[in-house]
Structure formats: structure tokens, C-alpha cells
Image 1 (cartoon, helix red, strand yellow):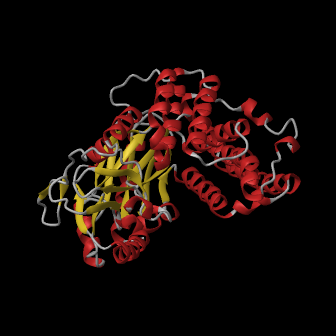
Image 2: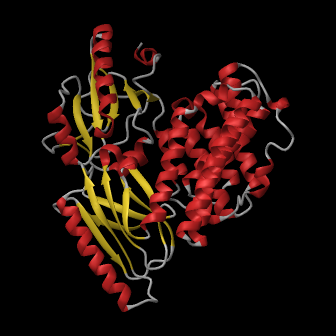
Length: 463
């Protein structure tokens, strides 16, 4: 812990103590901390995916804010591209120390309400370790798989009960931490049938006991408090995948089958989710996941036709509608819509001027430097094989971070630009993921609007 953070924590403790003594019945809350290796000059404080406040970092990369009236509940803080949850009970006040080089692992809370939030982080990290390392369990036969995940779940339930008794946390907090515990377990059960089939070639749907999915009956699918909660989002996405794939065996990766399966998911969601707001959010999530895959863009109009039939979200700002319109504007033969780009000297650049060769546009961020090295090697290979191809690298970081990274790495294989307005990039170029690649013809028209330079078959877009 840095000296600056220690001083801030001491001041914070004094403020909280004085405030608590002065008014036992208020809903005041404080939130602050320090960020090592920040990616921008601010963090977002959010609830239900909506920004409540933008908190600026000071010259020492610290932040601090007082809320005169903060409703108890689950919040999140975002330092893009990262985010994490924090729960505030009445009069809780928290500090957090963050290192973006190991964002989740570095998070430690201090202050009033710290222990329950540190427990929630501990549970999160344990679940993430499972997600990243236990893929082999899906190879197991049914009995071995069930024994393995049941054992892990029961150990965590025991620990959860011990901490709940020791800390005596609120029912509001318990709702979310128990959901995190359960949905991680439920997701494994949903994932097993189709993951096992994909990995082993053996279908086991007929071998699963009739009571295997009984836990679904206890889930509050229409509870608005769960709608934007990541453990629930991961669960219902996995559940709908499982349900849809069970109707569309054998498993397939073709574009047409992906469309059919995804429309089935929309229909399933329509039957399961009754609350209109919850249903709309679930449909948005399914649509976003579908459009995230480059190969699905070819069928996006058919998919969105069904989506708009089911969704009652008529907000003109609906992100799915924007992505669909942008995808239409990026069809082969069209010119790229104009967006705000700058070079390293901060000069504005018109992407449609100066295109004379076949051109590959890719995107990068300092958050994934290893990928940048891989792309650099791929560009060397493509230049050797195809000769006259131009490459344009578009960075999506803040200006300071972009220029700092360019000094650290030799990035001479491509023309370096930065998207100075990320929202415009998302809206006009349907930008949803960093490994997006665009291929232009020598006349500047679009040859392929959605590709990935690191795909093994990327070369087919250059012929």
C-alpha cells in the first residue's frame, strides 16, 4: 500500500467516524481509492449498468466522492475496460486499492462494509478460477462430473454459511452473494450436456436424470434485481444455449444453423421471461451476443426481424438497433461511414481519403499488448505473401495511454491512428470487440466489414 493511499485512508476514516457520530439515520456514503497504472483519468460509479457519477482521478491517481443519499444496494465501478461490483448497506463507506495490471486480483476493500465486499471478491475469484481451469471436468461421465462439481459447491456453501454467521450481513447483500454462489454452480450444470458432446462426441441428454434441472424451478427469472447482474446473465445465456442446442442436434457451426439456434433462444426467452423490462434486457443480451460473432452478420437482418417482433424496447438509443443499422451500412461495396480519427500529431484523418491499395484495418488497445505483438508478426507474414497491402491500426485507448504505448513498442508495420470518439466508432462501425478487422478494396469500398486478422482463414479475404 502506497504512502499516499495510507494518508487518504486515514483521512477517510476520520471523516467517516465524524459523519457516523453526527447522524445515525442518514444514508450518506463515501467511496474512494487509488488506482495503480490507470487506463484513463476517471472511473464510473454505476447501478444497473447506468452511470450515476463520473469520478475524476487526482494527480496521484486517487479518487474520492461523498454521496449525500445513497440507496442501499449493489453498485459497480468501472475503469474501462474493467469493472467490478461493490455493495453498500446503509452508512457503509469504502475505499478500494486497484492495480490495473491485475485488476480483479488486486482489489482490496477497507472501511465500513469492507469484510462482506472482500468476501464477495474472494468468491468471485474462486469462481473465475473454476471457469478458466476446470474445462476438463466436462470430459467426465455424468456421475464423475456431478460428484466433482457438487463437492466444490458444498465446500463453498459451508464457507458462505460460516461468513454469513460471522459477519451477520444484510438480507440485501445476501441476495446477491448467494446468487453468485448458486449461478456459478447452475451454469456448470447447464454447460455440461453440450460441452461434453462437443469435447467427446458423446450425447448424454438421454442419460441425465429427470430431476437434473429441478433448480430452474427455484430461480426468480423475472426479478429485476438480477437482470444486469453478471452471474445471472452468464447463467441464463448458458441455460438458453443448452435448451436451444438440445432442439438442434447435431451441433453445427454453420451460419444458417447459428441463425436458427439464435432465433430459438429468442423464442425461449419470450416464453420464460414475463416481466417486460427483464425480457427486453434478456433479448438485448442475446442479440448482442449473436451480433458479436463476425460470421453472424451475414444473417443479421433475419435475426433482427424476429428480435424486433419480440422486444417492446422502442428506445431510439437501443444499442441492438444501432448495431443492426451500422451492419447494414457496412455491406460490401459501400464506403466506410466517417468517424473521428486522429494521427499521432492530433491531426484529424478522413479514413476515405488516400486509400490506393487493398487495405486492412485492425484495432488494438494497450490492455492486450501480447495480442499486439501477435498482430505485428501476422502483418509481416501477410506482407511477404501478398506484397502491396496497406495496414491501418486504430487504437481505442485514451490519448495519453496510446502515445505511451507507441513509445514502448515499435509499431511501424501499420499507419497508426486513434478513435477519438469511441461512441461514434461503436455506433457507425458496429464496433463491439477488439479483434474486429475490416478489409477495403483499392478504391476504398468495403470488401469485408467483419473479419479477424488472427483467424487462420483470414487470407481468403485478401484474394
